[in-house]
Length: 423
Image: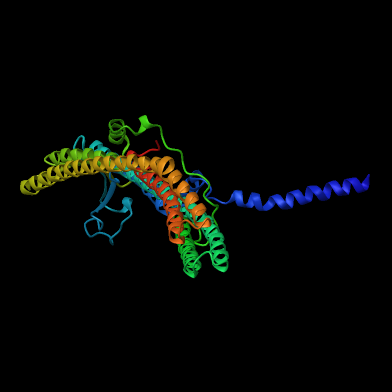
């Protein structure tokens, strides 16, 4: 019984040990784009800094609507009591002591306008936060698609290299048997070396893509990443409708959201500049102490006189010019956003058609051509150059399909960045 239990425990330990590398691999980010986006949102310093700026802008709303701190003035009158004593400052030892409590007040409505302006500016910063995340998410999705493309291109190149290695052996056997020329064997070796060179270049590009992605995730450049397993699924065709997406863009695009907030802030600033024609004022209460009692009370009202009309008219023209500039900037952003959206939707459609043609027409035809060329070469009916051309056609067809998938994902990431949300 003890032997059975020990054997069972040993088997369980072996299962755990053998499964540990698999779990460690699964724990690495990079297999799916969702795991990468989660890390980017939690750790990217640019996005974090924009969130903190938005928090700071929100606090400025409270400060903008606050009154100035009150002021206190103390005046000691007749500190020598008609030269009958040495100078003193104690209230009971001077002729009288005047206390003035002052509070500055802006003209009616100015505080509300300043608070509203600060709130609109905070909304503009919120739009920048959304825009920063949309741009970061697009970069992460693009990097994931590039890694997927390079990973599968490397696999394809390795498969074709293995096939080329077999063709080298076939060419060498045929040359040894006098059925082919030495040139065939040499061409096969050249093709083999070319593919090995391509693999080295692809490995370098894959490493660079990993470094770029780790930078977006705020991880060390050499931090390991899981192999990219899948690409995000494509949205349904009706979700890629240009008119519907343009309407969503007008409502959700972070840049347009920020520009709308800036226009409202400029409108409120213009209204505030018009209110500067009216004076601000200061209210004060003044009790006067004689000996140990308050003998009298006074009230003071102080106002500034807005006589510098040239300055105020210049402020009003400045506010109007800033409003016009904000409206023009918003129109420019809207035009650019519409153009970018149309361009990327067209790119998605083109890439989808290319992928479909490569998958259903080009690749099957290339594979049939290669099989026929291989059979013809083995039978001595075709030369080796024709066989290599057929092999290259297969490679080009598969690369065209992968390239189209990469283009679709990159264009889709741009569309989602423009719309401001995932489709």
